[in-house]
Length: 154
Image (tube, rainbow, N blue to C red; front, side):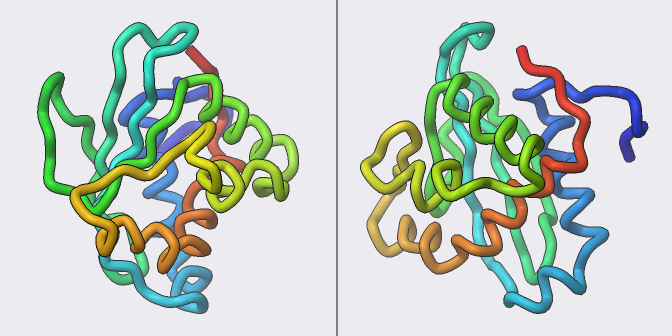
């Protein structure tokens, strides 16, 4: 899907498609921790080079990421929850993953969302937001797939 030398820009649909591709080609790893049925969003708030918020939607079914898309401006898709944070927070998390092979304890979803800062989960009701915690380990492994995605930021 991606060249070993061509860097993919974050944030972009291509970046999240690359994470999905890596997940979908590692089914054995994800099967070992259990299935996910989840529709979530990742909202990158305006900060630094990102001048307008961007919302990426991800649909997980079974042991893979079945769909990745970018929502249009003003679109409010029905999702279980949205993880949102400033560009700089997302960038720091992904750089940490790429530097260390996986997120260190200060850059995991659990840590970054604990106090709703620098990331927070928002959604239509708490029972759907709770899927973040139910599938936390699988979601963290999905984001850790960034270790194999050459990335340029901005």
